[in-house]
Amino acid sequence: MAIKTTRWSPDTCGCVIEYTWDNTTVESERVHTLSTITKCAIHSSQTNTDAWNTVLEENPRKNNTLEQILASSPTTALYDTLNGTRQFKSGITVSTSWSGTVPNRVLTITITGISLTTQQKNTIQTALNTRFGSGKIVLA
Image (cartoon, rainbow, N blue to C red; front, side):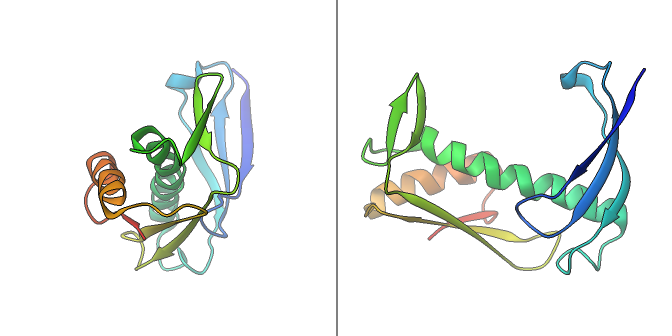
């Protein structure tokens, strides 16, 4: 058993998290154990464990949202397919912002570089609601 320590700064807040894990364990079965956390202002009111759990929910939600938008896009004007994988077309930008209070922050997604119709936005929003729950993500 070789215990490794990782320092991680998520792109959804300013927290700095150190956690340990056993590199001899298969990745799908690995357990990450919180070592230390330097909480950002957003998560400062939470206990260390609650901040860790909140960041572990928020960061993948943001990352998986981008994948979900590409997967559920009703228009090929939004994406190109390269080697079987969808990616946003050149010139299309996706911005994220957070509102609300932890642990119930809402992620707002803004897509620029394309004008989506109301129906296209509704299709994407429905897919996001199905995947993450209503009210967790707003497509602006």
